[in-house]
Length: 301
Image (cartoon, rainbow, N blue to C red; front, top):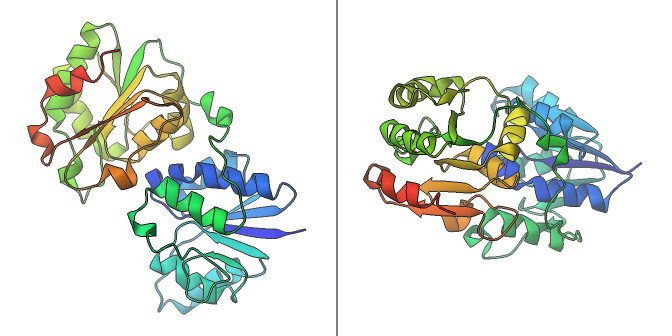
């Protein structure tokens, strides 16, 4: 049996943008044993998906951790082909650790190099599609995500997801919590219940929102990624910062409004929906200057 390794370590938005490539690799090798090397936050979602036979966790040992590197080398050994979808400096070093197998990626000397000189100027979706085409794999337009759509709690509809979080080390990517609270009030006035999602670290932000709009439901820290996929599939709308859950909402077909600051470039990293016009992008160099009224306007049919 052909043994294939796929490498995708994170973060969440990048992991979601790899759903299409995951499905394309499985479609190209329906009878192969496909292993995903990833990090622990994505284990449960990957194991639930139809794309992988095994999921192996990369603990990302320090390069001077000889025992950790030996265990990683054992995990990388014995594959007939490797698709490195992380294409980072770290994952490229895994090529040598794995014993130089047939490798799709950017590792120096690999047999299936993604050598497009414009790869760093391409959106993640286009870059990965181009990488797989060069490796002989046709793209999958939109992967089947029905395995996610029924997950998560059932809420009375209609409701809208609010995603006020972002990477802790990038506070400039966050629209102010009080603005989310004011937007929640407008949603509630329309008969749409605001539902705040995120990790437990976002609970303080959620408390600010619910203090402004008591009708808002705080689910921060209460949904894993699989449950979040189902919640998004049934939501009328998702509004949030440029962060991983917005990519998942867009992938599930949810109408989405994504708020970008000058910290990131939507041309390269914006969430991609399933239909034209599904995702609205609002940009402001400083998100504190993005008025609630402008975001509310984007919610009109």
